[in-house]
Length: 562
Length: 48
Image 1: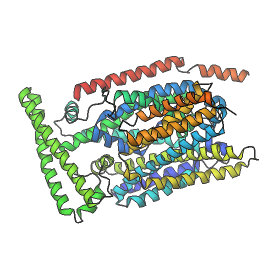
Image 2: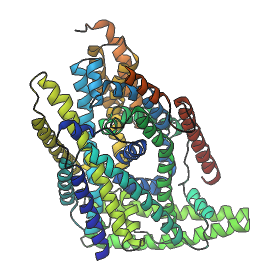
Image 3: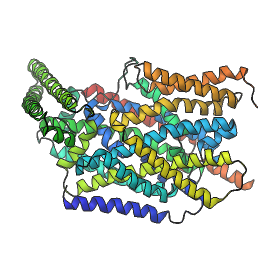
Image 4: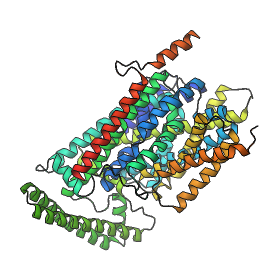
């Protein structure tokens, strides 16, 4: 990075932090701090909902997912349009009519205090942990770019987020997210254009897709019924609809975004904006990753994308063996490049026999190159057992740093960090709101209200959740691909929370005690399944939700409601 | 009461030139989804 990149990076980060603080300087009462002033239009709501979900992780991890596994991850979002329609038609009018601060307040009114607190506690548990992963994502960038220690980077960036979040409120989150999304779209398009410009001149777009497809990166849909497959049309539709319904309908970090709309109409249109554009957007980001993969077939990639880890170990005892692996990888990569060109030439010549032979040779070279990458990872883990071998989260940032022009690098990294800060701010804001409204205010009951005291307290809750998120972020490098980790974590808890809400909305004869014990039993069942079965994690949304609804119905005849 | 009724009427319409009803908006969203899945299937069949 040049001094121009650092200037752009620091200027943007500090500018956004100051802008957020300046715009929220008037928030002196609890309602405005937690709920905003309810004037947001559908465009602001739509972009804010999108920005809350699409943080730095979307930019870092999703292209890595496209590079590693291809386009199949897009199926994860197939349930989303159905879920958003249901939320817009059923959930949203009720939230607005009851004028609630949090989704869990509705549970208190429909059932009782203990069910409200159970729903809120499940949200705090999973969102508190997910906030840790959200802090971890920008820390990867800083550690890669600046060569800092990852743990130190997590703590420092986390502290910046806490300072920014404590001073900002819900309104600031929505306003800044609108601008951030515009810059994010701009950054994605810029990266896409640079990628296409840097592809070999004789390689058209169709050839690029053909190479990606031949090497297993273009399977966007999979109709297989195998339950062990992580992403299929069916997991996306059935598991995804439950995940989306739960995330958008019951997760306070999202509910807080759309209940701040000026009217029901604005909130509904904001949700429908996401229902239309989310799948194309995710496809585009995954395609970016698949294209980076093709780009690296014609440009030598690093054998391991986590550059600081590689540099640290190549200087150590394992250095000679790692260097040898790197050399072998370089040789195999050159051979693979020739085989790909042979295959493309055979295709263009229309020679079926030569094409089949060249294809086999290309795939064999690809397998050897992947095997060498696997061997390198094994060697690195042998040298340092604490090292995470999965390097897909480093793929896109490595490309950005090496191939984007100066100035654009700084801006793109600033965009990623700013998006991350805003997303974390949104999460911490929701965590603090739930702690304040569903625990503190709820447990205080009818005691006299001191608004200034409660505003101060909710700021302390925000800071406290920030510290917990930092602590979890320090362990986040133990998990798999970041975007998967967040969805996996959500899938463990979301199904049961959704089950509670579905009972609340649609099963009027079930009371609070039945749903409370039904939910606890269902959550234990989901955890038992998670630790013993190997099914795709999206199914846990369905299992948790179905178990909670069935157990609530089954228990209802045997419990006495007070 | 009058304000409530006015708000309910405002909420019943989308305020868009098309579609004017929420049912129409939901059908449009589902149509976009079906188109996305068809295009992704075509992409898979062509290149995967």
